[in-house]
Amino acid sequence: MSKAARIIERPQPEFGSDVIVDLLKGFGVEYVALNPGATFRGLHDSLVNYGGNHMPEIITCTHEEITVAMAHGYARAKGKPMAAAVHNIVGLQHASMAIYNAWCDRLPVIVMGGTGPMDTSRRRPWIDWVHTALVQGNMVRDFVKWDDQPGSVAAVPDSFIRAYRLATTDPMGPVYLCYDGDVQEAKLDGNIPSYSLERYPAPLPMQAPEEGFEKTIRWLLEARAPVIIADCVGRREAGYHALIELAELLGIPVLDRYGRFNFPMDNPLNLTGMQEKVLAQVDLILALDVQDLESAVNKLVQEKGHRIPTPLLSRNARIVNVSLDDLLVRSWSTDFNKLREVDLSILADTSVFLPELVRRLKDEKEELKKKASDIEKKRGEWSKIHAERDEGMAQGAREKLEEKPIATTRLYGEIAETIKNEDWILTNGTSQGRENFFIRGNKFNQILGKYKGGGLGYGLPASLGASLANKGTGKICVDLQPDGDLLFTVSALWTAAHHKIPLLMVVCSNRSYYNDEEHQDRMARLRGRPVENKTIGIRIEDPDVDFAAMARSYGHWGIGPITEPRDLGKALREALRVVKGEGRLALVDVVCQMR
Ligand SMILES: Cc1ncc(C[n+]2csc(CCOP(=O)(O)OP(=O)(O)O)c2C)c(N)n1
Ligand SMILES: [Mg+2]
Image (cartoon, rainbow, N blue to C red; front, top):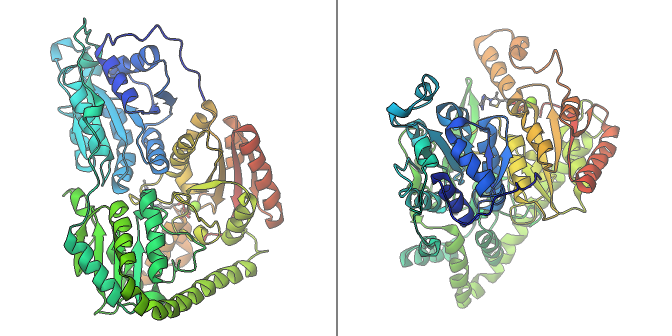
């Protein structure tokens, strides 16, 4: 990665923006992704010449959407934030969709901006006027946890500490801090604000009250066939491990919604993808951090062009819902999803709730003994469904092995085979998530998954952020990268080259915004119009994009387009050698089937 700057000794902060750099260092912020801009020229100078461009180090980006998406991916992988600096109104507008994606994922990003001068008598003509708002934070206020614009250097520490704490307290989220040019450039003349970060400890996580444990335990022990639906438990290691313990203790199957990676794929109780079969027979659902419970318990059935939710659950099944979602509800976007009926709602952090639940359940020795044979019987039944699921997937993949264009299942299988002896992380995936059945995660945070905001342009920058977060760990970061999503932010390839960020990138070139092709297909059928027109405005052809050449033009290793199934394995192995041996990004462009 890039060199640290030669600095003049860093004895005492001299300017307002030096104070900001001290705070970034104080919280251990490793990186600030930015595209340069005059409104944070003071901060930029402080990062380089006061901070030494180290902890945090500047990551130069070619678009503000990339800066925030990178920080989003970093937070997902690391569990803590890095920063993104965005130039006044214009940079913030470019960044806004990526901020929204981070918001929907409840992940922390410290977004910093510059503005002003707010004192109009000090403005340069034109540019300072068109690039200043009253106030800039308004633009993103509906989808950040907090925004602030401190009016003086003395107000900077409080503002930053509050922002950091809010961003990193569950449910986490992005924050926006806007710094007036005059505040950044103010000379301190010895008036250095003093604070002691140890006196601002992170709040302890939120635990359930007694009644929550008492009822959940009673209902779990009474249930004939309970099931767990998990969405974001895997954001914390303690929650991830406690979930495995809970499932195994009572033989409960787990359906993973992949907000984060929640449950090992090879565990026989992992029944992800089998919800139709499972939900029909359960009498208790323990929903853990499930943002969209509606989708989790319904099947979407096509009817006259609409997808109608059809219940999968029997009406008398009880639902216990444990989440912190209600703490982050705003009125502007309805990312809180449909309101669901439940029987017990517990506002608690699963990373402390689940370990305590397991501890208490283990104390119910008599009850567990009574249930032991029922639990074993059920465990056997669930394991059988697990095995059938996997065999069905494998059979489907075998049938498509030699197909051309290359079947996606073959692609996933070849990737899995290539990295099987590595310590790997899948940093991004497809919208369907089917790769998770083939590239099988079995470790905490091994699959970083998709984003709930649904705004395209995420995959490459987020994967680079995840790779930065894993620097020095020896882990191989793999970006399974749909082509349409990539084209939004493809210039992040430059950042990867400049900062030497390793990544194994596999582009799924179906040469289409295929998700929408299905919509056009349905529209045409519904309206009795020519179905063959469904590709117009959708296909990414004529010309085909040469992603490998594009990678090479940025200084990376690139191969493809791979069209022959038999060429795939070798290309992936070569790419892995480059990533592992040379610590670089290698791109494999694979022409594959639509789904
Ligand atoms: C910013 C943004 N613009 C447009 C869309 C609408 N959209 C949803 S999925 C999709 C197609 C994605 O194509 P690709 O990434 O290649 O995945 P594929 O469906 O082909 O697997 C589009 C255009 C969106 N979600 N976000
Ligand atoms: Mg596509």
